[in-house]
Length: 258
Image (spheres, rainbow, N blue to C red):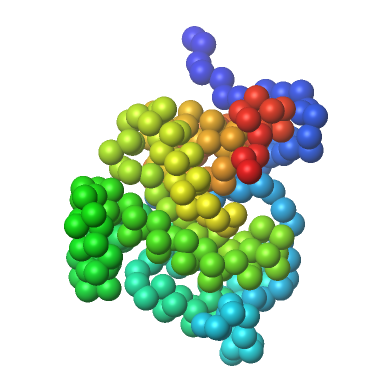
């Protein structure tokens, strides 16, 4: 009986650019956790820096705050703590950054709660509706503003670590979870309108969106993959990640966007 053979078992020729070898795929799986929900954040590979970036409301760089376990987690274990929430005022993130948080992730549920339980969005939302925007378009205007503001706060970490840390993640519409090309176009659009170097575009690891992950990475866009519920899907995401890097390096996917 012939079974499906994973690309993990078959090393491919080395690409022109220094990319992770095929053995990296096996290493990913060997260290993979037991099946549960987890995310894989994907950006251009850069070495981590031991720098601890502190922040203040004025310029983003202030006096060092008290050292926390989160700082040790990064310095000693190479792990970057992220905060899974975003709402206005975005400057509420500053104490968290000072305490060692190195990135933020968001999703439609987080924004639904933020917008529906706070009056901080009311004025902008009212102006958008009066200007003729429909509810969904107005939603994206609110989200993009928060993502841009958060990216600005994490910019010092991004700069000081040469792009290894300091990202903010925004998710494509969940309505596109079964739409491969629609997800690609949405990711490109979000990357363009947010217009910040430290933005991650979050894509769900549905069967239809795994090819989207490859294409978006091939276009030089950093991706945060979410909703991975099995080792098999984790493997597929790794393949899409490395295939996307190879396509980007070879120019097939358009390379890194300006």
